[in-house]
Every structure is written in C-alpha cells, then in structure tokens.
Image 1 (tube, rainbow, N blue to C red):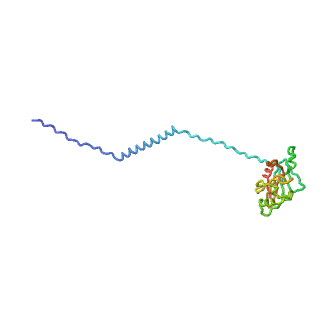
Image 2: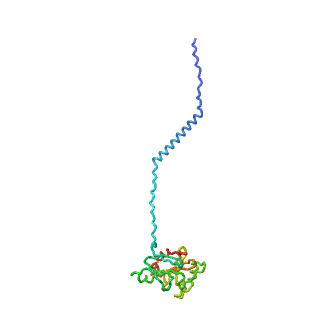
Image 3: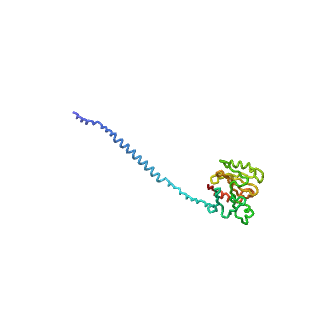
Length: 235
C-alpha cells in the first residue's frame, strides 16, 4: 500500500501594506520645500559675497567759498544836494569846483595829470535839475520815455537843429530804482555822456563831459558808471 503524501501547509494570503497617513506626506513635501528655499537663499547670499564688487562712494568736491568783491566806491567822497534832494559818491582825487555860471550844478573835475592834462582839463561831471537853456520840464505823471520823445523834437540852441540830430540814444539804465535814458554826443562844451532821469516830476540830467577816440570807450566812462551806481534820491 502506497504511503499517503503529506498534506500541503495552508497558504497564507499576501499582506498588503497599509497606506501612510496623508499628514505624513504633507510633512515630507513641506520639509523638502523648506530645504530648497534655504538652499536658494544661501546660494544667492554666497554668490553676492563672491562676485559683487564694492561700490565706490564718490568723493565730495570741495565747495569754493566766494568772497564778495570789495566796493570800490566805499571810501569815496560824497556830494549832497539838500535843495534837490540827491547825493552821489565820486573819487577822492576828483574835486568839486564852483561854477559861477550855474551855481546850482554839481561841477566835479577829475585830476589833471601830465598824461591827462590835455583832456582832463576839459573834462567834468555835472549834475543838475532844470538849469540848462535847452531843458524841458516834465509834465505831471510823465514818464522818462515820453519826456525824451519831446526832448528829441526840440531845437538845440547851439546848432539850431533838432536834438535827435545832436544826441544819439545809447541805452536805458536804472538810477536808484528809476528808469533813465543814456544818450551820447552833443555840441561844443556839452559833448559827452548824458543821463536823464525823472524824480517827483523833476527831470535830472547827469553829464560826463568827456571825449572818445574812434568810438568807445569814452574817457572816464568806467568811473562814470561807478558814480551812477552810487546815485540816490534822498526825498
């Protein structure tokens, strides 16, 4: 009788692994993202340290201090007219001279030296209000422009021609805040640079009787401009 083969052992069913909880999966994902971020930040920082060049700060330029120019007229002599209420300064080596023909005029002459003798003796600065023969008084509220238009149409007593043919318009300037006309030319002893300005209805004429050779510059023109810059009305 044949032996009976042993019975096979009972089969064990395969064990299926249980899925991990979802919370653990998210922890791994977040951890990976965090490590990646730290790596990126660290790489950027190290890259800047290794390859960035130091920024050179510009050196501030020294600021030059401007020293105001001294006033060349500060220590000049002062002429004051109490009647017509004006004053101005003139060089210390110029002299106030009495004018018997026009006593109300300021008549100031430059020094007469050897090199200037031929010209300086015939040169003078005059300031006057309504005293010359060909003068016109300003009408009430008349501007200097209106006055000069009338002046140009008047007759020059020395030449018998119109003033516009004797005097040439040069420019307008400001005298103590008032508009003034500068004209040049003239006739005879009235030749030079002439400034007309109106103050309180009175026309003032400031003249540098001087000469010029072949146009500008006029003799003593720079000094005359400095004198005009000191001119003030005191009323």
